[in-house]
Amino acid sequence: MSLLALFQWLSHSAVGVYMQQSQWAFAVVETTHLLGLAALGGSLIVVSLRALGLLARIASRQLARELLPIAILSFVAIAVSGVLMVSGEALKCYYSPAFRAKMAALAIALIISLPVYFEQIRHRDERLPWWHRVGAALSLLSWLSVGIAGRAIGFL
Amino acid sequence: MSELIHHFCQWLNDTAPATALRESLWVFPIVETIHVLAIALLAGSIAILDLRLLGIILRGERVTTVARQVLPVVWTGFGILTVSGLMLFAAEAAKSYSNPAFRIKLLLLVLAGLNPLVYYRTVYRRIAAWDQHAKTPLAARLAGAASLTLWAGIIAAGRATAYFN
Image 1: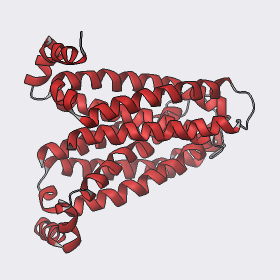
Image 2: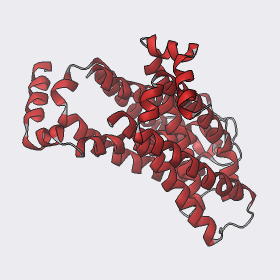
Image 3: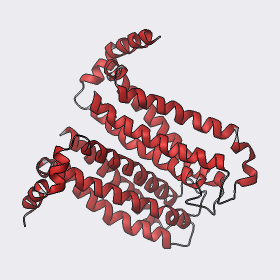
Image 4: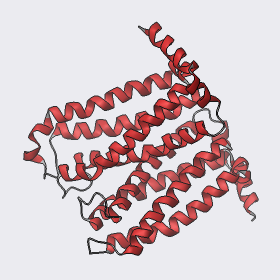
């Protein structure tokens, strides 16, 4: 199945039709997406700043481990609401350069941030190696680009 | 009073900088993007303290330690949100005045500001007694729950503002 066919199928699925016809569904799902952004972004910022050695109040691995459930739950909320939003305007997304940029940025962000995050939980020393700190900074930047490209979907 | 506020909004709306921002091709969407993404700095990091007050995460850490860990991030977010928010408001002041979602957002913001004032003047005065406890006093848990609810409401009302504009 081609990518276009996948988006067309999503658009014609029961969920897609519901998202297009319901008066409130899109607004509710979009708000959920934003709340997830706040929770995921906040936990990643706090954990990454700690990896960079800033705000060193709580042990680095302890902080990363305790905030992991927030990051996972909020990512699930973002992913589910994101798929619902795409099903509501599948073809607009398929042809949107901002949406494509966002998906590319998302892939990069996941590839960078997952190993960086789990290494932070595993690492016992308080001061992380230089490459880990570079990874934490890149992780933040990659998530920032996901957010910027995401906001741009509504403008372009 | 409401007439005065209405006139002020119309005046602000028509000032040269507000007009320039409203009519700009790029600056308005950039400021709006900054405003949306800075939500993560404020609401996302204060949620960590709220969840500690509720005894859900970081139960082994002192409440004051968690506060020192996240409050600099919270205040950074607050600064960015205030500046970008005032800019967005100025650009759309006339529309915002009569926007029901925006009025609800302002009301929730006032409540979100009062919540820590009450917290610091009441249960926080005895923090030495419960700083290390996983289970905090009821008043502290109520403050955490109120903060989570209010900031979620502010985000929802802020998003709804664009639907009513």
